[in-house]
Length: 416
Ligand SMILES: Cc1cc2nc3c(=O)[nH]c(=O)nc-3n(C[C@H](O)[C@H](O)[C@H](O)COP(=O)(O)OP(=O)(O)OC[C@H]3O[C@@H](n4cnc5c(N)ncnc54)[C@H](O)[C@@H]3O)c2cc1C
Image (cartoon, rainbow, N blue to C red; front, side, top):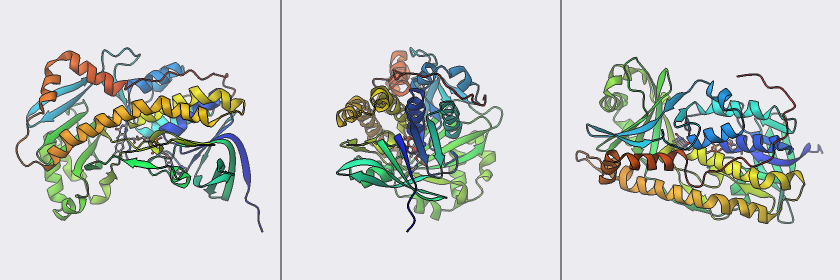
């Protein structure tokens, strides 16, 4: 009989997304022995959001690496716009936020994650294991004491004082822990694809609303990241109408790119991302804490999921770094993280659900010509209202600040 190799760490984080990588960095910075497990070989993945909001940029500033971060290629969005019929309105203005950066940085998520991984690697207590998939829990008398892991070298056991599930909205760890989930529902899914950009194209992120259709365009410099929002479960019907009909739809929604829709060569280049909104009732068990999408899958409305995940990580490190370093994390500490983050999560999801119900579901089911809803017309007229929306989207509810301790980095990192 061969024995499964076992590693021991203070904290094992399942999932190297925004929540897991930020937590790994913050804990290592505080001198905590931390291992992040990521099931993929790299951070490249289907489009999962590019938006680094002012609240996250503020965290990056508090970590002392904002200038370095902003040297990475990105586009700046100072406002968000929506177009209903032929009328375009600004719905959020970030310029006046009380933060270093009054803009959203649009940056591919893998660049953000690579950046966090490089910064974390400067600390000797940080380890990142790629192609390592958490498959089950190690438990001892009802307490989670580690993870079973599948890796190319074979199965592995990681024993830890604390396991953090940051493995996203299909979290295996939370499922194995049997934590009950409330499903909040979403009326839509999103098809993502790319179109090249050309001189003279608009630059600001835009949501275009037409009867039965919503089309999102995010400026990624050389190309557009396009999101084509469809009613949940309607992909087959769309595909049955054929690729040419789809291209014509895209050309109608983004006339400036009409000459480039042939770049959508097949359905293979159009990725379906199913939208899911849910929340755990209890985010923890003794020895285990869930954060980010693993605790609360967010709707893409407002593009705030990455930032909530990062905020969870900051709150977790603020509360747990010292007890973890001293080996005395209690369920009460874990409960304190849930209490801290539950209100911002609930309020944000409530707003997202209201937009899903009042705007998205209506737009997707109507066949009549559209006008902007009354509240959007109001926002378009009142500068204060646009700033308020900018604050809600850009900073969120009860933004976190880095309070966990910092040890000097020992290793040098490759400069970016
Ligand atoms: C269509 C769509 C568009 C979106 N657009 C935006 C946007 O524009 N802006 C925004 O802020 N948010 C957006 N979101 C939401 C955003 O993607 C998530 O809220 C955010 O990524 C959550 O971060 P996370 O770290 O909690 O989880 P994830 O980003 O899902 O990261 C989880 C990580 O864990 C890894 N993993 C999974 N299972 C395991 C396992 N068993 N073992 C080890 N590793 C594992 C995964 O590979 C992944 O790297 C969008 C979501 C959808 C569905």
